[in-house]
Image (cartoon, rainbow over all chains, first blue to last red; front, top):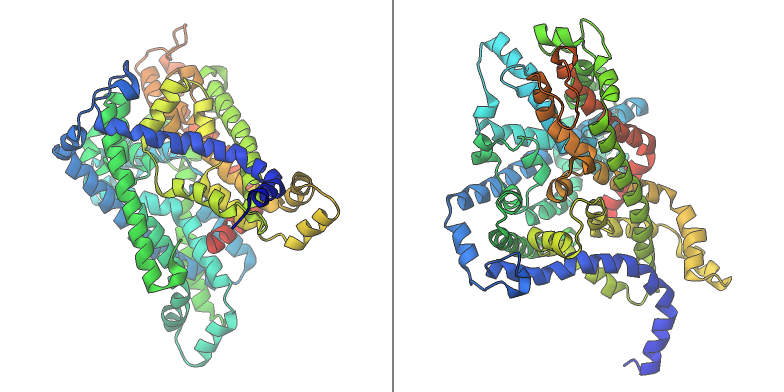
Length: 307
Length: 294
């Protein structure tokens, strides 16, 4: 039990440090905690002139309106499906790249590879979208042109939604490969090289060493990153899904995700209430997912969990 | 590991191909931006310019309003945002890295909760537009991205690498916590601060979501929105119209319209690529430590 004066002593001792945390805590309070009160809009028919608190209640109408719409199924499927695909392929590519990089002994070469792989990480999604147009545009794209000349194919990617499942996945993996592989690479770097050499001396082939000896060292990191990603599976990277397909409406059947849908409902149609309802749904599902994935991780191995 | 020659060759060959794929779009963009516009019209895009020309860059700086504005806005956002962010993030991360800070748990929890739950986009939008009245201000882009939980926890992990003995020694010498922070922690944390500076600057420079939500005045556009609208602007010029916002008519034949877009893409991207190569040493170390220990 802390007495009153004891508590005061703690405050005094920690006062300076408490003061240091103040600017950040104030910002977080205003921009992350106060908006939580605003979720009541999801249960109201929001009238801008009346404000949040004086708009009339309408129960679950906003949720009903969204979930009964055709779009609900599409955007949920796209968000979760594409996220899963990107997590899966991204992990495989990043781990494979880390193994490849680990084999490079020449320091200068290694540095060069890592730098080049990292460069796309620094591109904005707007830029990526524009670059992609110059590759895929039906009239002048370099890739469409090549496909036409070599294989005689006439493809208009911008009129073919299903091809965007793979285009978006490739773009996402391409942009994240430098960062993703670096993480796995540094895990490998922290392990004594002699361990892997010992396996080879015992007669294991290079692939066996990679599969049986090196991969197990990566499993904890793979688990942690996958858990993190699964916890966020209901959220999509707005930039990737909005700027990369350049908001082309004929591609919505594949490229429209919760975040782009909410943005359009809010900014283009001014539908505050329904957007708020979808946003709240997304937040609640996200919370549940994080708690669940974390629990699963904890039960498998305590080191895998986040909290 | 023993390296048979053929094996090393295969590894290097695969990595070279992958690096080529990684870099190809940027090389293509640069090459098209320096291709003579007549060649582009008659032969389409190609990787090796038949005739080299800097017309697009010259044109961009001759009729500059949108681009210069965008550049200036993005510079303000990035510099102000990064400096303020470094300061308040380091200020909160430092006490959190100290074992003797009594409120460590509560403060961490308060920050952590916002990582796993938030009110969604709409309440934040209403707060910023209706209550703070920040529509069409750069503040609306800078402030919400300050003191992000991920950055705070990253910096906390990096600060924990500083031996506690140093802080304790300073305390015995009569240094206040603020004094220790400015005289010992910050000077010792250059790699950590460089990492955060790069992450923060990158985020601000490339940010396009907050701008399309909060900014609709063209002259307040950051560079990414200028870029996002350049396609329509270029198409506009191509059709023989004038650039939106400019008064005198422009002869469409004198405009290197095709290469302009690519020149703009290059101009908008190179600052980040240079910053990365300059800070790379710190960045890679900082991020991997953060990822592994965090």
